[in-house]
Length: 257
Image 1 (cartoon, rainbow, N blue to C red):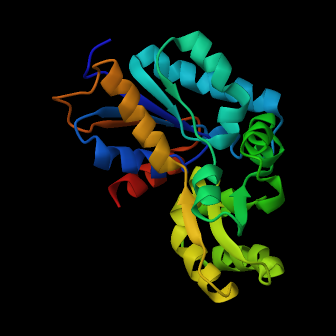
Image 2: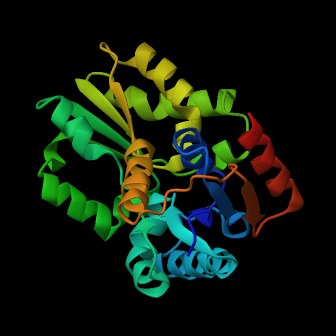
């Protein structure tokens, strides 16, 4: 491997672009490949076996091009395939994890809303995280079926999205909610809608927590440890997708925004 080799980013759709765009800001001299498995989207409502199969097949295509590290920018794919990927590729494979720990530590008593796909909330990896933190009684787990589909349309300020978020928040308006965890990379794109809606629904504005920042920090830590941070790259991004040409154009459009 060379320092100028690509860093692979993988997601079931365009959600992982939120993590990639942050990585581009933090590490502008790196080169990247982004693979969106739009042909099998959404992952959050598929079986773990299906998610594992699709994820491995997609990441194999990036690995064949030559990558020095791989970021699984999808909580559902992380839960289903992260261990197999680490054994297979023998390069740093960085996972996503809902930012429950910082939300819990910021306030020792308040309730925490976790917005995630049904697949993430039902996963053994998520359950083990909650057991390890011992905070199950403080969590309001909301399986946001269909929200990622709305994000995939590319209009992050749509009435549909605002209506969806309001509908899932209102039943908990009487709770003392101190944190909202965005447990899917798609939801990073609608953070503005989450903040505005939360401000109108809850008495006190909850803090928003996003796992992408910790993921990009970990990517940097591992590359630095192996002395593999690029010093001469140009932030080139190769876009790959199993979806349509329209999917590719939307991904490239969002990258430029």
